[in-house]
Image (cartoon, rainbow, N blue to C red):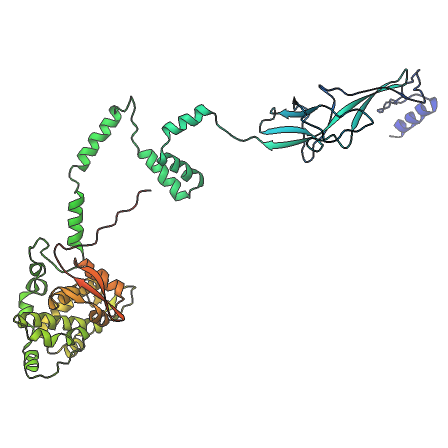
Length: 441
C-alpha cells in the first residue's frame, strides 16, 4: 500500500493529467452583436390561420393533440375604436377528437360579439437588422369534456327491434340489481330454450321437449292442486258440492254421531221452560240459548251449542307454550271440573281433535277457530254477527274474518247506530281464499 501511494504522489509532481469525468462547457463565441435599438417594421393582422396563444386551465394537455380550426364571420361589433387597427372580422374555434376519451375545444377569450379587451402579439426579430415584425395573435382557452358514448342510428334501430321490455329489465338488473337478482336473471337465461333456424326447434331442443313431456305428463293440473290445498286446510270436513247450504257442514260428521248423541242438553231445556237463567261462561251461547231452545229443531242445535261451549271452555284453559306459537292444554282433572256436566267421551273427543300430546300447535289452533265459526253459522242460520264470538275467542276482527273466509263465508259490514257490525254469511256457492302464486320476476 505504501508503494502505491508513493507512485501516485510522483505522478502528481510530474504534472501528468488525470482524466476528468466532467466536460468543460464553453460558450459559443458569436461574431455578430445585436443592435442596441429595435425598430418595429410592420404589424400584421392575419384573418386566416393566425397564431394562437392558448391556456389550458386545469388540463394537462399533451403535445400530440392535434386541433382543427373553424372560423365564421362575425355578426356585429358593438363598438369600434377610432384609433388603432380594426378588430378581426372572423371568430375562430379549435376542436380536437384525437384523444381516446376526451374532446377538446378552444374558444377565444373575449366577450361574445365584442372586440377583445386585451390584444396579444407575437414578435419576429431579425437579429442582423434589428427590425421587429409584430403579428396579432388570438388568445384562446382550451376546455375538455368527456366524450359522450352515443350509438349510431343503425345500432339504436337494431336495439329497438330485438330488445323487448323483459330484456331491458334484465339489463337493468344486471347493472344495478342485488346479487340475488343477478343470480335469478342468469338462471332464467341458462334455462331458456332458444329457437334457431327461423323459429324451428333443433334436435337438441326437441330431445329436451320430449323428456319434459315424459316428466310432466303425470303432473297435477291447477284445479287438482287447488282441490288438494282445499282438502289440506285446517277446516271441518264439508260437502262443498252440496245443493243446499244446510248440507255443506253436517254436525254428525264434524263432531261424530256418538259424541253428538252423548252431549247433555236436557238441563238447558228445563231451565228455559221454567224461565230460569242459563249460566254459561260464553257470551255467544248466553245470548242465544233462549232463542234456540224455542225452535222446532231445538235439540239438534242445542247439542251443537253445548259442544261449542265446551270447546270455548277448553280454549280458555290453555296457556302459552314454551315453543313459539304453541299452547299447553289444561290437566284432565281441571277440564272435567270446568266442563261439567260433559261426559268423558266428549272431553276426550275435544282433547284429541284439537291437541297432540298436551300441546296445541298452529294447525290445531286454526282447526279449533274454524270449527267455532262453523258452529256459530249453524246456530245463527248461517248469518252471524261476529261480535260475541270475537269476545269469547279474544281475537282481532281481522283474524276472525280470515277464519270465517276459510270455511267459505263472505264478510260484510253494516251500520247499527254508532257501531259497525261485522256479518259473516255462509251461502252457496262458497268462496274460499285462493292460493297466492309468487309473482314472476
